[in-house]
Amino acid sequence: MKKIIAASTLVLSSFSLFAATDTVMFTFPSLVAGMLLVSWLLAILQAGNAVIRVLDILLGVATLAFLSTYNVVALIICALILTAECYFTQQKKAQRMALWLNIVSLALFLALSAGFYLEVLNGAWLGVAVVFHYVCANLYTFFRRERRLQVALSNKMKGAEAHNDKQLLLDRSLFLNGYDNWQKNSLSRVLVLIKLEGLGKINRMVGHDFGDLLIAKLGKKINDELNASDVLSLTMFNEPVKLCYLGGVDFAFAVDTSVEAHLHQRLVHRIYDLVHKPTHVENIDSELSLRAAIVEDQKQLKGQQLLAQAFLSIEFTNEIDWLITFEKEIAERAEKRKQLLADLSILDFERDFQLYFHPVIDIETNQILFIELLLRWHHPKFGTLEAKHFIDEINAAGLTLPIAHWVSEKAAELALAIKLEEIHIPISVNLFGKELLQDEFIDHLAEVLVEHRLSEGDIIIEAPANVFMSLPDFGESILRRLKENNIAVCLDDLGIEPLQLSRLPRLALNYVKVDGSIVKELAENVNTRSLLSGIIDMSNSLGIKVVCEGIESETQYTYISTMKCHAAQGYLFSRPLPNVGLLGWLKQWQKRLANGERPY
Image: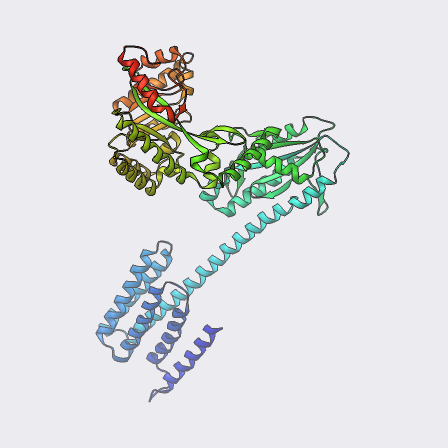
């Protein structure tokens, strides 16, 4: 409406200009001036790039100045402004059509300018070129906006389509109420939870709207697959519906197994095959994976209780297992985690934590290469817990960094005590991963070294291989910072997961620890021996010392000794011991070596 009023006002202004002439009411220049004013304002009112709108204002002013004076400077300014608009639209790669329209307008303006100076055309014709430019700009903006509205409407319709497809599935409350009222006398009911995986990657690549369509289409397919009569069915819109959409990527259904005991398993495997086949959406084939939890209702529990047990089954089991049956141990594990999290909130590091030590032995000399410190929690209910049994809880409670600070300070105190006894053996500290990537922790370590008068190599930082191998570029620079601060770095648990050994040369490492699972297979598996040999050769060529963990027998020790491995660690030499006896243990080890005895 505002544009119509503004245009009408300018039309009246144009008539006033026409009437102001002495001889003829309508002249060609005055007509062009009126057209110019109208199209000029319409172009300015169009939403668009601020730079282009400012240039349009200047172009209109310069054109009116030329029509009033026929001054060559105004003509040049008009040409320069049109050239500038060509330049700025060229920068916007999504506006190629606008660029070509501006080029055509500039070419027309230059051609008419040449006609004017050759006295072939009236000067008002140059105003016509500018009017043409404004008209093209208006039309382009209008059609571009219409196109955007069409795309937005299409996306909205797709979203509505996905929403409608999900509406045709049972919602949580309807499903749970239906379950609670279903065959109350039956003790052979099973609830199945389906969790689709891999949608996050698809959302990042194609968009959430596509992901919603994919989930909706898969939900409909899964519902169609549940065609057995013993599956809980509720009526929606006069249609039987068996699948419940819980939200996100979660679905559920229930089965009466009194007739066919393994019906739920057969249905889950059919759904597994269905999900792992590519699903065609918008000319794109997408494939997801799934995890499923089965909960047998043997005590006539409420549907909500069974659903909670199903979610616990997926949360507290290994991600490798795609089909999980709820067991009592899972609930106990969840209860234990809840207890640990509650106890962490009132934890006293000095009272509840203790550090144990475990030596790493130089294979050639039997000297102690370094001492690894291991964190233990003396829990009042669960006894002494190794760090691996409460690392997840520490991360969840946000205590990763405070505990890393505490452990590093205790390690520095032990390293200083050893140095005062004129024993030169480094101390290594195990980190949980994330704290290694923080500058704050690196600064803290540097301060601890200075405070305890420790020198290069006295402290070693250990972290799991998956942390090191997933480091981005800035993470690799932090490893270099550690080395610059005289802190040695050890990669732990090498071999637990698939690994890109090509990244080893890029990491500033001093030590690599090969996981004990590889050592256990050395005697039986030729491929494992080849893998270990390759790791050792690569590490030696890079100046990295290799430590084999989990050495429990003389046979294993002999194997790694023949492979040019630098050091070993395991129960063959010593079990982890409380750090309060460290100095006495070290002196006893050195005494045996000095007497020519085998120290272990």
